[in-house]
Amino acid sequence: MIEIACPHCQKHYRLEDRYAGKRAKCAGCGLIMSINAPQSAPLSVPSAPVSPAVPTSRTAPVSMPRPAAASIPVAELVPPASVATRPPVPRQPPAMPTSHGTTGHADATAETLRGTTSHLQYEISQRPDFSIVKILMPQGAKVFAEPSAMVSMTPSMHLEAGFKGGLGKTFGRLLGGESLIINTFTAQDGPGEVMFAGGAAGDVAYHRLNGNTLYLQRGAYMLNSEDVEVSGKWQGAKGFFSGEGLVLLKATGTGDIFFNSYGAIIPIDVTEGFMVDTGYIVAFEESLQYRVTVLPGLRTAGKIKSFFFGGEGLVCQFAGSGRVWIQTRQVKSFLSWVNGFRPTKSN
Amino acid sequence: MQHQLLAQPAMSIAKLTMQAGESVTCEVGAMIAMTSGFTVETTSRNKGGKGGLAKGLKRMFAGENFFLNHFTATGPNQTLMIGPGLLGDIMHYPLAGGTLIVQGSSWLASAVGIEIDATWQGLGKALFSGEGMFWVKCSGQGDLFLNSFGSIYPVEVNGEYIVDTGHIVAFEDTLQFRIGKAGKSLIGSILGGEGLVCKFSGQGKLYCQSHNPPSFGKLLGPKLKAR
Image 1 (cartoon, rainbow over the protein chains, first blue to last red):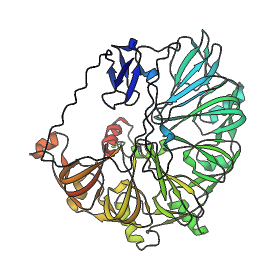
Image 2: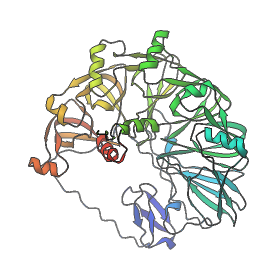
Image 3: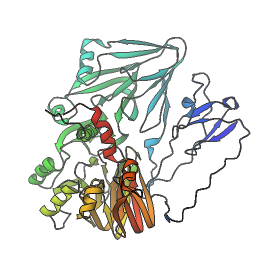
Image 4: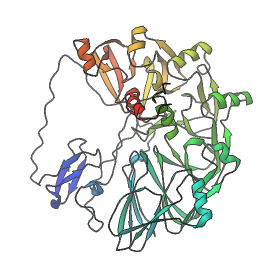
C-alpha cells in the first residue's frame, strides 16, 4: 500500500503498490501528482516568510464549510481505465461539520451518489460543479442517451445513433427541447463502462421509475436505461406561462433515468405545498399537481406589485406529495449578465 | 431563523428555516423556492421602516434593485431558498450592533432587525474602487447574507491591508480605505496590471472575493457577436 496526500488540497489516498511511479489526478482539486514509491520521504514544509510589515492574519471563515467531496480517484488515475480492475477506493474523509451548526444536516450536494439497479450500476461524482456519471453494465445491456453526453467508454461498448420510439415520440422529444436523435450504447463484447456528463458546468440527478411518471424540464434529459420511455407532453396554457416551454419531457416505465442542469440540483420531498420560481424547476413526479401563479401577497394590489417589481414573476405551486428537483442557478441569468459585455456594432 | 448554506462555493444557495411571524428581506429575484406558508410584500423601504423613494433610488445606484421583497412566515418551520444569479459563494454574517459596509451587488438578504441603506464613500472611491458608486451600509442586529463572484475569504486586518479593486465583498466600519497605487510608481502599477488598489487601514474584518465579474466579462465580451 502507498499512502499519499495531495500536495495541494491534502486529500488522502491509499493505493496499491503497482501504481508507484505513475501519475494520478486528485479527485479533490484536480492537481496531477506523481505517486511516489512506498518509501515516502518526509514532506518538507517551506516555512512562510516572516513579514512584520503586514500584521494581518487570515482566520477561518465564519460560515463557509467546504464539504469534502467524497469522490472517485479511481476513474481519475491516469493509466488504468478498465472495468475489471477497479483500484481501491480511498479512505473516506471524515464528515465535516456543517455551516455554523445552526442546523444539523450535512450538505448533501457534494456527495457522490452510487447505486445498483436491476439494469445497471451507477456512480455520480464530482458534484455539484462538474458532475459526471459512470455507468457499469452487464453484457447485452443498453442505455439510451442524448447526443454528445458521452465522455468516454470501454471498447466493449457499441454506439448506435438513431431515431427511437417512432415518429410521435421523436417529435415530442424535439418539442421538449431535446434532439431527434438518441444514441444507444450496448455492452456488446462483454460488460462495459460509459461516462456521461452534461454540456454546462452543473449537476446530475438520478431517479428510479417504478411504473410511475417523471416530468422533466426542457433540455434536462440526459440518459435512461431500458424499459423507460421518454416522450413529449403538451402542457397547454400552464406551459405557456411557466417559462419552461410548452412541452415537458415525460419519462415512464420501470427503469433508471438521469437528468442534468446548470447549477446544483436539490431534491425536495413535497408533502404540503411548495413553490418554485418557474425557471428553477428541473423535474417533478407526476404524483404532484402544479399550477402557475404569482407570489402570495397580502392584498391583490400587493400581488400585482410583487409580480411586476418583485423580480420573481411567476412561480409554480406544487400540491400533493412527491418529489421535485430544483436547480440553484439558471443559464438565463448568466446569459443576460454576459450580454452586457458584448461589443456594440459601430455603424 | 435558522440557515444552511448548500452547494458551496460555486452553486451556493442559502436555505432559511423560519417560524411564524419571522421575516426576512431579500434582494429582488433571489427567491428560488419556498414552502407555501409565506406572504410576500414588495416595497421600496425597509420592513416596517421609513425610507421609500429616496432610499430606493440610492439602492439603485448601489447596484441593487429599487424594490425589496419581504418574506414573512405564516406557519411553523417554513423554508425559503435564496441564491444569487451568477456563479459564486454565499456568506452569513451575524450582525450584532455593528455596521458592515457591503459592496453594491453583494447584498443578498437580511433579517428585519438590520437597517440597509446606500452610502456614498466619496468621489474618488466611486470612480476608482472598481465597485459601485454607492455601497450598502448594513447596521443593527440579525443575520445578514452576502454573495460573491467566486469564493469569499475573510481577512483580519490589524494595521494595513491591500485589495485589488473589484475584489471587495464587505468590511466592518472600523476599517477605512483609500484608493492608491499598487506599486511605487503609477506607470509601473498600471503596466503590472494592478493599476489602482484599495488600501485598508484600521482594525476589523474584511471579506474579499476570489474573482471579479468585470474581468470575466471582458474576457468573454470580445469573443461574442456585436449587439
